[in-house]
Image 1 (cartoon, helix red, strand yellow):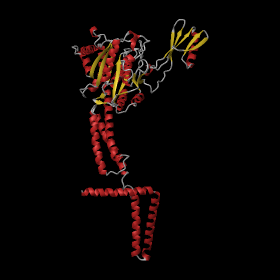
Image 2: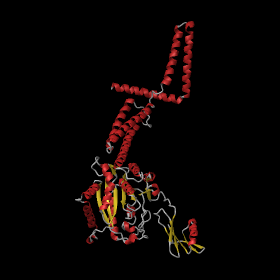
Image 3: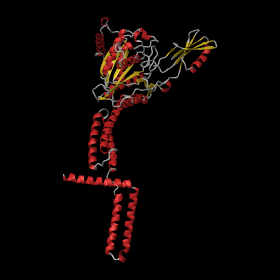
Image 4: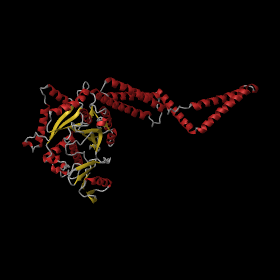
Length: 583
């Protein structure tokens, strides 16, 4: 929000500021000498909802000098669509620390089911080359194509501004985006099987960011994305290729001796302000796109010079698919600071190419894969946290071995979780907490062995990347945890044993019965004088045990009722066992 305060005396500025900060209305404050007039503003306020900051611009009436005071950032509505800073960059006092915010990422991921497949479009490149501007057009394309309103016009013809509900951008020479930002509104495909995320990154080589931090931003963005757009200005220069090869060297090293497949999926050079169109092709977009492909083939073709050829091989070995597209200059109106995105002020050819490019991108975004396995939303969050931890130590780009280890560890952890889930789901159906029937121990053991083998097989199919010894150690830990889990299921099943606890009643009952029979026998066979003491002792024993059983029965009626039910079950189990033996 920008509010102009016009004053004739500089000493009145502070007074004007105080009134402005206290005011809750949109006002135009005029300060002349010591007189303050407040008028309700109709056109003096320009609001930019896409920005989270407010500034107050003071313009002196006499010499037209300006002073800008930054007010405290406002927190946007969490439910409203906006970009969320998932990676922030520290200041000089914090060593320009690379700080990942997992809670912010999880807040976005939690908006969609965890089993959905993930698609990520990320834009990287030098600063002030229009990355956020491009992503804002991506958002307009997505929103307009999903809408059924005003189908008579092209989607870009309906855009009358580009600063509300988009990634924040602004014209000028100063950098605008710092860190890495993700749009907080995922786009679910029509089939409900995958979800798309858009990611914006801090510009590289901005005279304020170190090479290490630039590598962190580029590297982390590449690890996240399934469709990486490398934004370059006017042409693909050799230094663009060298920087790309440098930042992707770690991925190639991690891939070495493991797989012949390139670790990353899609890289597209987007050449802004393209200057290679032939004049006769200006009305033929198909021919213009063909010339883009020819240009890329020329750029990455084999070279005789060794270092140039190694650079190209490095890039080709890193990305499975490499393409190129060019956008002409959008028009000089875009370079003005007052430009807010009106399509009517832009070059028609730029809009036509932009239309084709947006369709090209979103029709071809692949699902995110790591080591050949398609990643779900839940797994994507785990990988993000694992990779971010590598970049968080003083903004230093990790060693390739560390990157390999983090990737392999996360992959092995996910494989172990999948295997444990397979085992517990099967055992829960057999002897889980919600089961009521007792399972014979031999049958329970057989089910455990079957599910254990299936779980180990599932683990081995997925844990196929990284150090073999560490995978073996993880497998051994999995087997130990399966055995521990089986012990839990055994305890649960034993609690349902119909014979469990019968000794509490059977043993005293047998003692009482034995004492009663023996007393009756002694009374019948012994003389009164000889067996009297024995008979009395047996009588007392029988009486005490009987009273004990009656007291226990009175206080534990429900347990006795359950005991009789267990006896019935036990008899049934015994009869079934006898029947199986005869069969």
